[in-house]
Amino acid sequence: MQPNTYLQQMKDGYLFTEIVHRTKAFQTEHPEAKILRLGVGDITRPLPAPVVEAMHRAVEEMGHPDTFRGYGLENGYAWLRQAILDNDYTPRGIQLSIDEVFISDGAGSDLGNLSELFDQHNQVAIIDPAYPAYEDTSMMAGRSIEYLPCTAENHFVPDLPKTSADIIYLCYPNNPIGTVLTRDQLTEWVRYAQAHKSIIIFDSAYEAFIQSPDIPHSIYEIEGAQEVAIEVRSYSKTAGFTGVRCGYTIVPKATGLHAMWLRRQCTKYNGTSYISQRGALASYTQEGKAAIRANIAYYQETAQVLMKGLSALGYEVYGGVHAPYIWCRVPKGYTSWSFFTYLLSTYQVVCTPGAGFGAAGEGYVRFSAFSKREDCIEAIQRIQKL
Ligand SMILES: *Cc1c(COP(=O)(O)O)cnc(C)c1O
Image 1 (cartoon, rainbow, N blue to C red):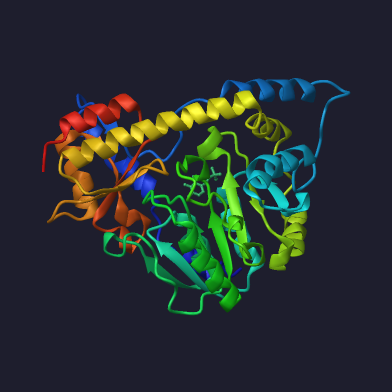
Image 2 (tube, rainbow, N blue to C red; image 1 turned 60 degrees about the horizontal axis):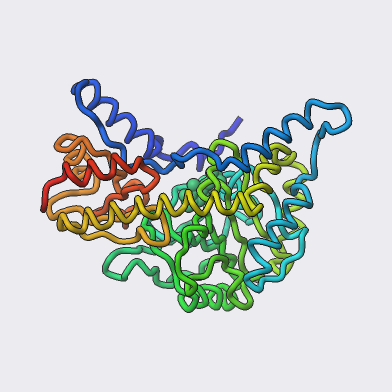
């Protein structure tokens, strides 16, 4: 047996494991400390009631001989795929066919699995800092990577690649920075991909947080994008499905990759749970939409508490409007990990060190609006003015 040497060479230690480890160590040394966790990247509000009710009904159906369901289609039930087109695409003027929609068990799996569509010898471009899946899966496949730094100096707008990139990972609204691309900026990427015959993997897990009509929710709002882009979405951060598992991926036929992805899924994926898909469908009912809007509004207000609070304390903060994340520059003399330690030991506040998301994240930390509102308020009271 020869192991996958690329996988074998990967550094171990996942960012969030390290944060949990350091936080636990601090708590053990200071059992009386009330630690405020503002680093969480997970949803904290429960599932909307209409989603829960739909899932209850689905479980009941599974217990009766005439309504029981076994394997569904690999790419999902047609009623969910149609609801996706009717709600997420048609109203934005995007025409896709129902078989271009693939229901998944979440964006995380597909972001990794899509890598199988491509030969090893493709040049990859990744925005830096980034959600770890893009870099990790490219490294596991042994591909060469160009990092596109996003820092305050370039207003967090990545430059086009210097290499001829074959595969480009973009994530907007962005995790961890919380920034967005305008329609014109996204158009430049689509034109680049057309000119270089590259494919863009567009992660729009946070599209529901967009608050301005000028910001595209889908890359397919850009003319020509169906030839060059795969879009990955999730019910996790929008409808609270992080523990339920459901998302979807759009692979347009015009990319030339549709038949291959279907072929791959038929062999390697036996479909998303019927119960999860029923829950996802309920997120499109009137009551479902209203409940989701209320949850997102809550996170958006929490983001404002953090933004305004930190900025009044003298910190330089970015993002936080069209995304639940606040990207904060660390004070002079600190690294992102030393500032993490400082906040934990001085104020018992936990953030996420930016360096954990890539080299260009050094010098920043991330605060998450998925944190408890009262913890955010208390953290702002504890942290002293710069
Ligand atoms: C949370 C997250 C995902 C993954 O979501 P799933 O729960 O796997 O659907 C994908 N991309 C980004 C940027 C995320 O923050």
